[in-house]
Structure formats: structure tokens, C-alpha cells
Amino acid sequence: MDEAENCDRLAIIDHGKLIAEGSPEELRRRAGEERVTLTTANDAKATQELRARFGCDPQATDRGLEFPVPNGEEFLAKLAGFPVELQRLSLQKPTLEDAFIALTGHSIRPDEASSRDLLRRMVRMRRRT
Image (cartoon, rainbow, N blue to C red):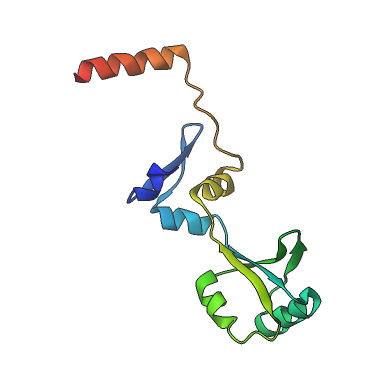
């Protein structure tokens, strides 16, 4: 996946079928919204404020309050002057692996090439040299 981040366009193929194509950013957007996680001095009050001010529905997790947002960086800027002390704040953007899972319904499988497929690849490589 690291190499895929540097591509202009990608295609997600699953069981020989084209599932999606686009830039890495376009595919990540299809994986879902960004997620904000924050810990505060008073999570109950922070939950009330987030609901009232932004219409968010934060869920308590072991990492703090988590909730999805459509544009994380813009949302973080809106937290300036938040009335509850923020102790930790993070933004998680979907990855290409998240996009693959969202679009195919499963994680990336290890290469399942048969010995016959491997032999074909070797023959093709020899023909090129």
C-alpha cells in the first residue's frame, strides 16, 4: 500500500472484477468520514457541548470520545475556544486499506498465485530480457 500512495490513479480489483478506480484521495474519501478522538477534563460536559454546538454524537471509547466528521481539519479549527479543557486531540483519516475494506467487504488477501501462475510470470520476465 505504501507504493500506492504515490500513484496518480489506482484501481481496486477483487476476484478479477474492477470495483473502483480513482486517485488515492478519491478512494480514501469513499472509505468513509474522518474520525476525531479527544480526551477532556470532563467527558460528560464535552459530549453535551459537541452535540449542542456541532450536532456530533460522540461515543466513549478507551481512547476518549470518538466521532466521525466530514472534514476533519475544518472541524478541528472550530474547536478553538471549546468550553471544556481538551487534554488530547487527534484526527484519523481513512487509509487506502480502509478504502479497500469498505469497497470489497474484506481485508487484503495475501497473493494466492498458484505454481502455474508463477511459472507464467517467470516466462514473461524471460521474454522481456
